[in-house]
Image (cartoon, rainbow over all chains, first blue to last red; front, side, top):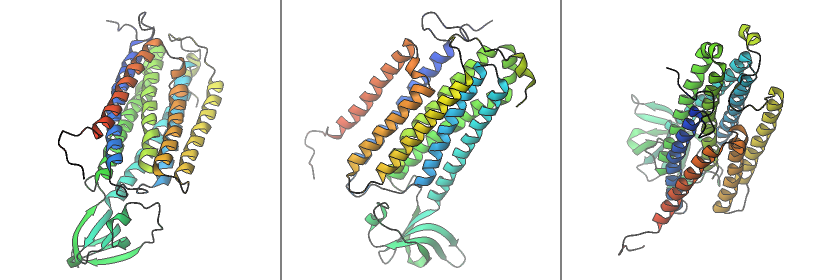
Length: 258
Length: 119
């Protein structure tokens, strides 16, 4: 049985079915991320003055990731255009670029997660707070070494933009540690939102890469038998990929810059 | 980039929207779009490091630039500037519900149960 309207437009909608489907799906995705963004706005605006983190993210890496994702959006579009003009070789090239950019984005982002999870806030028994990246967590000798600084007020840890942070290696005996916690999603509201929103976005990057990778690897058969349908599949996957880019366009300023 | 099949199907693929497609023109357009996106990113970074402005003002300006960036991606890369009515209808409903989501959330911030004591 032939599936109708995979290539030709359905008379009542004016477009082929998969395109209607992807736009309905993207509408539901807008609601999903919209909920998270509105939660962010609510918690950010409701936070006590001076208690919301600034400058906790690596702006350089965030900027690089924004550019990488923008480039991948361009190559996705060019892959579709290559199909439209009947050049399968160009399609393969541009979609390979998209996959490489997606991989670069994921690697940079996972590196940022690693940075967060190895960054510790250590409350000491003398009331001071040590904050920095774990260099050594020595269980035998019973001490930890961090590359960071010591402060006497937790509020000094929130706004890193307005102060010059000088870091040095600090050795702390375990007996002087009251409690210590890494900058994971459990650390505070900001980190919970950061991991939730960027984690969900990263899942979308992975899902999009799987679809694009499938078309790149196994697309030739359909290209040879039904190039118009294949081109539409590439368009639909491209629309999803552009949506992933759109979400990041707002995540970057919200989490890294404001 | 030689592909044995490429010569066989080098003719444009006939899909339902029969706009003539010129690859080089598209690639040029993509170049301009990319430069626009880079400018928007640079502007957002510049605003975020501007000294002496309130957080609210800087955030608002940055989000305006982000919205422009999103318009470029959605309008040109997703072809939303020349889409069918059906898609605009879907997006119209989406905008309505998302706006409702944000407005109700912000409204709820000031909606305390009767008798709540404010500090």
